[in-house]
Image (cartoon, rainbow, N blue to C red; front, side, top):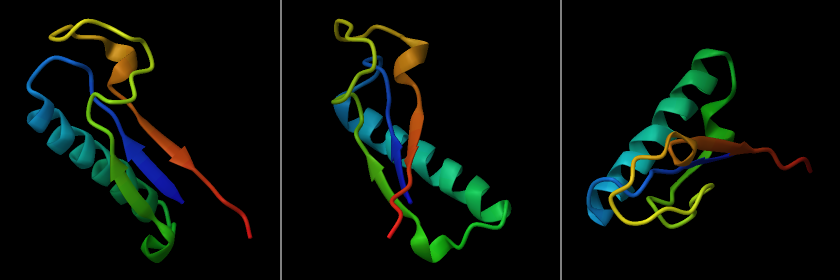
Length: 74
């Protein structure tokens, strides 16, 4: 399971990397609380580099404030 956190362009790029990492961690913690084995979860934070809705710098866009969950079956 790969949990990827994202952020919008408000705030600095460095801040948004940290924010997206915290967002991914929060989602991973929620999955573990629901019984998912934490050992199968990987985290990534994209900051403002993979916007769902492209915006100019400094724009608050709720669609860009998200986490995605990818599940790979073996």
